[in-house]
Length: 288
Image 1 (cartoon, rainbow, N blue to C red):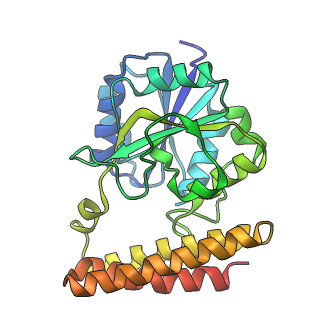
Image 2: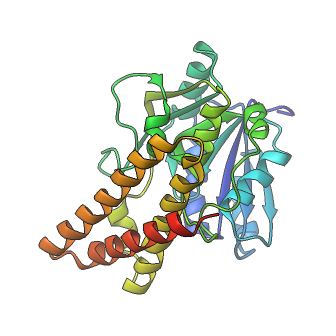
């Protein structure tokens, strides 16, 4: 398979168990014309563990820069596939994911595609699109794009400059890289669709929070909030009305989250929501 149609990109901080689950789901794909590119920013122990996946066409790279966006861009620079499937290291594809995605991409002559991200109970998680049909994605649904279910042509990813390495885990603005990527795709008139028949498993926020202590929850909430605030500030200059609407929605959602967590006496969520609210102000007013 010298020229795979799809290159699956996995950026990780060295969490071997998660990556193994992701690779297991790739082994179960009914579509076989793909390769996998792992970019590891963490411990090198993973290199030995992935040897058991010799039945997958796999590239493994280690880099020193702890930044998911930088890692994805690095993978794109060495990818051979026509399509880039950006897969989170804690995600798992349904067996028909790649087959269905390629069929839809070709059917509608698309530049990019995303699907539904579900939790262990197969319920769409908060940030996932949950529409009923395949449809064009517009600017107003920017915050519903999730990297773990997205596929984009390599040509278009390179055209827009890839992911903004100022955003995402490992950087000051700890999220927003996926929405920023989508907004810039749409700005370049890319044809990007949502397909309700595409499913990817991803841990829910509850699953994530249950594994963290309160200090880490605060850091996560603040970092992610800062990313959301910075994202809106970045794009408000060319879309001021959009920026005002999104800023209002973002702050209201954070305030309501704090109130709900206090009323329901949910400590972990309360810490996260207060940190997120602080981070959103911080990101919006300090991003340059």
